[in-house]
Image 1 (cartoon, rainbow, N blue to C red):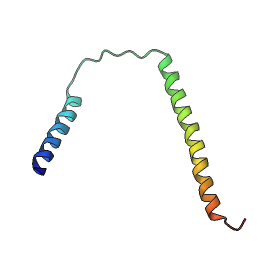
Image 2: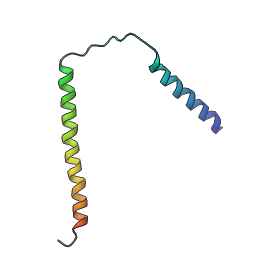
Image 3: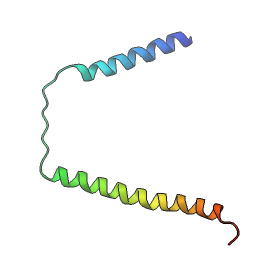
Length: 68
């Protein structure tokens, strides 16, 4: 039973990867606001990561210095 599931998984994975290998015409358009939206997304992710990392480093600083 495990071999059938594994074979099915490999087959689905191969078909999924082959779907990216085929050539298709692209009907896409990126307007000028898309770049600004991507920069905003990256900036928000960076600021969010800084707040999260500050909280995590605060936990380690409290554990390092128990004498105070």
